[in-house]
Image (tube, rainbow, N blue to C red; front, side, top):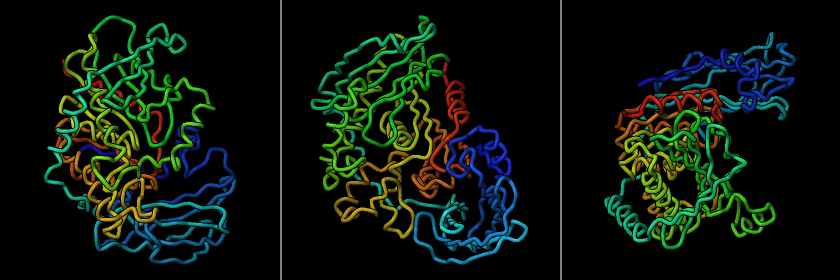
Length: 432
């Protein structure tokens, strides 16, 4: 296992020079800055060990003697203790205590209710296990659904998009029929130079949205990959803003599709999404310029979940890259600890026995158990969207060759350098 542990002080230096200017913890060009340094450099402890965090708060880089209100609670759960501390010479040390069971504690800090910050530390997270059960008919369920979808021949409408082409690369807008009812849109980028290339499927993060920046990851095509960036709702990225608004108002709320049909595994919205990912692989493997060997999946958040899911469903996938995967141990809240995005505990009547039964067929943990290809997983501890508890659970279940990049300070983001490094990792995994 390869892992990178970061001391917060070094991360701060990077942030101050603008390397990751969008980080939630340290807003770029802010007059105020929190420093939080756990007394274990990797932010990890054994159960029963006490964690202590040195806290400092600066204005214009000058430590401030102010009163800090804090609370401490398990990852994504209500506080179990609270207190106040006065910073002296701009500093104080807070004893977070410990955990008797594996998990994460979150230290939540505030000054006058205005300046807020938090830091999570882990306790024996390598021992975390899923609450979600593995259905006995899981494999038969997905085999049947893929077979049913493949009764509908792939139909692809393809249009070259000259505005997105360069001297080195071409870009195409595709509409792919994935079963007898559903289609997805995707942008396909590829090298102009004739040859045989590995293919990469890139599913999207959560939300009802089209593909907004198809050239953002053009470095894949420039480095010799055929890359398919897909959406999951059948929304044409060339539609007008007015058309998009009219369509999306049909959903109850931004991510309402994740609750649609959850009472019945056969009617759940995400069934056709998971099938569409495999059908996208069918399409990529039909391309005459595919190298015939290398099939990769890569994504973050919901896209990270769909990448792992596709790798678990389709053994043609030869390597998988995922950042902070969503949809992981979603029913974990029933074990009185953090569960995965979309955090169904926040909605009424969403953790019923019927819905929890359906979730098991769609939860990343049960696909992670089935992955056989190499996996590269990245997650941060301060993430409150896809919490570290659930990322560790997924990591712990993967028995295939695996590597991880741990970025403790990260909330729900990865840097451009990290993203580019994942492409370089995939290059190293290419089979000749």
